[in-house]
Length: 166
Image (cartoon, rainbow, N blue to C red):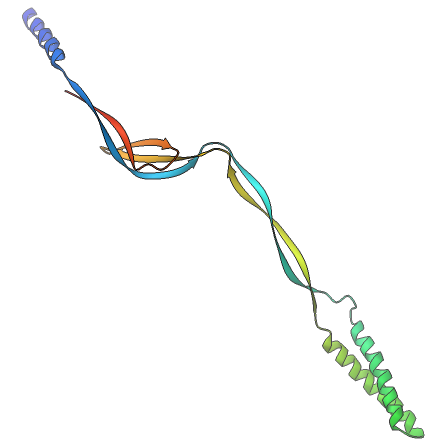
């Protein structure tokens, strides 16, 4: 028994003396390069502005019709006064004033369409800024094992050291 133990130890020691390994380098093709930022990200506000046409509500609330009625009534009365004679002159003046009032009011209300003005509108937007330098996370696979290397540019290959022991 002691002899077998001694023989086993000698064989183990002899095989250790003859065990060898060698190392070589291999370039592995990168399958994915993704930009990443390492540092802090801040949101910087900025304003975006534009001009817009907006309808101005009528502030006179029907005064266009009243002014038109007054002007139309005066004009109708003057024209009616020119037409008639004697007692008909009074009737023509009153009739012209009534017709002129109705026509003046209708014309003024129909011509008083909405008015527009240019108004400046602004909104605040945010731009993301990173104060760190961008890095690329390059990923390659060697024997189904992922290999990751960070660099300042995308890589085509990652060089690895392979050691084989026997």
